[in-house]
Length: 321
Image (cartoon, rainbow, N blue to C red; front, side, top):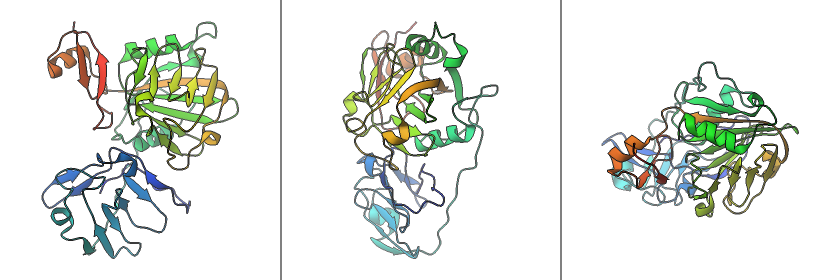
């Protein structure tokens, strides 16, 4: 069983259900797999006094004593391995051996790029919590507010500058004068379509507390793709104004269910000190690839950017050369 969620050391707290498209149940016997496409909001259940637990109907759960487990697959988890008999043998099973492996840390920022908002370790945490496969130098900085004169800086400049770098999934980092720091991961490129971009894959994370949250509600209004905003996620639930100098936070619509207990107290609101945007290297899909994959020229191409949750589809207006 694979999970992108790390263990919170020294925090004996039940976080409940965690949202992810990328947790996985894998059968080593026949090399089949299952992903939580039937309910990503129930991907994993986190409780301090319980073993690994996956799925809305407890598709797979390990008892606290790590000696026994139960299997009730094909609830949240779908795929060839979502079969109780095939993967677990029977509904109730006895554990002979249990091992836990963790991913070794690697530097995820491009050589020569530094952040004044987040450490490399925090960027790894954002990537990890977003469900991305961690690889060396996966993020490249395309904009920093402090690199631009105050008279020239605005959201249009940031969006255009990063779009010219690569139409790819991004992390936007914001620090406030209050000391709060927040990261916003968006699997959909900012293309200035001037309409809402639907997805459940957008994540906001407090770099101060380590808590994070996904757009699991009203996904059709996940974010407004418009260069006139620095950010406009959900119903202005994370909004960065056009001059990149004020951040506001809200809850209850796109961010309808908390993950790891995140709320606006963690995120913060107020005057902005620094804004950075980073794009996923090799995470872009260019117009020529769109034409090759979808067989279209100058028409809407449905594609899944590399690095986005694997079950998400995104629509982009791309013109073939």
